[in-house]
Structure formats: structure tokens, C-alpha cells
Length: 229
Image 1 (tube, rainbow, N blue to C red):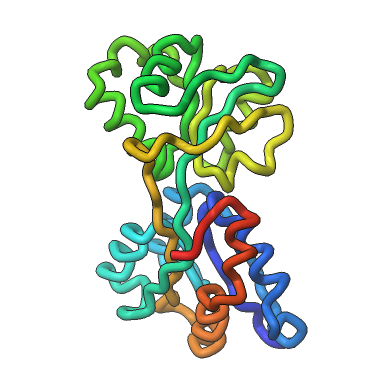
Image 2 (image 1 turned 90 degrees about the horizontal axis):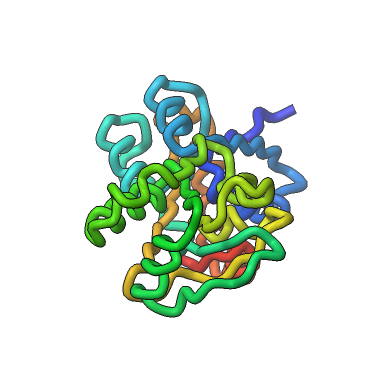
């Protein structure tokens, strides 16, 4: 049996990659193993030299790993763009998120605010600093550990207002997604793939990455709350 193509990704693209792999035209001939963990953990595993074929992470992380010669130079392939959405626990009243001012007001009024350690969480922390509200809300922030969706805390009633990549909120039961962040403060993250320097089958990895950015996959990406890059 052929060695499977190993893909390591962050949780943000887990469902998308599973769908793409399932619909890969060569799926009957090619075995693919998908491993999805927190983004920080994924980068650590790549830096540690773990054997894999494809790495899918935020574009800036792919660039960093390429610079450290953990990924093949020139192999970066931009797959999707993903925005941040806002959610509340199912059954809770919806709040106005139509503008930057209304989102800020909702945050100040919330008993607890949840976000992740990923790109969206880093961005939100900077946004709160820019608004000058970090000290005011710091005791109400619930930071989801790497690999754990913010929605899980909302569903249990531990977070009133949650922020995360739409793709990570969509599968969670027990929450209501209010919609995307308003355009003036939206963060669009590009998730890219790169071929690992440790890959023993770079040609097969390249073929799979080429499929992931083909026009045929646009609908799959949109179904997962993302847009083609």
C-alpha cells in the first residue's frame, strides 16, 4: 500500500480540508491522512522536523516556516480567505454587530468575551488595545486553548459573546452565529499550503495542492464559510 500523503493543518481549515480530500478526483488512488491541531502546535511540529507532506496554516506562518527551510521554497499556495464571525449562545438575545461602534458596545456590555489563540485572537487583542478597553474587559476574557473552539465555551454558557473564524463556529451546536465582523474591522486571514521539506512524495503533494486551488473547489470553500484566495 502506498504511503499516505500527510497533511498537517490548524483547526480553522479542518472541515474544509476533509471535504476537499473527500472530493479529490484522485482520492480512489491516493490515500490522504489529515492531522488538525492548534495552529501554534502545528507550527511547532513542523519546526521539530516531523515527517509530513503538506502544511496548511496562515500565510504568514507558512512564510516563516519556509524561511526556516522547513517548507520547500516557492511551494506556498494560497488556498482560502477566512473572516471572523461573532456568535452568542443559542437562545440568547441577538446583539447589534452592524458597525464598529455597535460591536464595541456589545463587547463592553457582555459579561464574558471569548476568542482563540489563533490569528483572530491576536487581532482582537490589538483591536481592544486600539479602542482603549483592554483594562476594562480583561477580567471578562475567556481565551480558548489551542485546538478548542470558542463555540464550545458558548454552548456551555461560559462565554456570552464569542469571536472566531466562521469555519470554526459553523459546526458547533448550541450557538447562534450573528454574522461576520463589520467591514471596517473585519480580519481576512489567508490560509496557505506548503510542501514540507521532509516530504518523500512532493509531486503527489503538489498535485493535491493544485487541486485545492482549482476553480472546481470554490463551492466547497463557500460551503465551509470561506472564499477562494
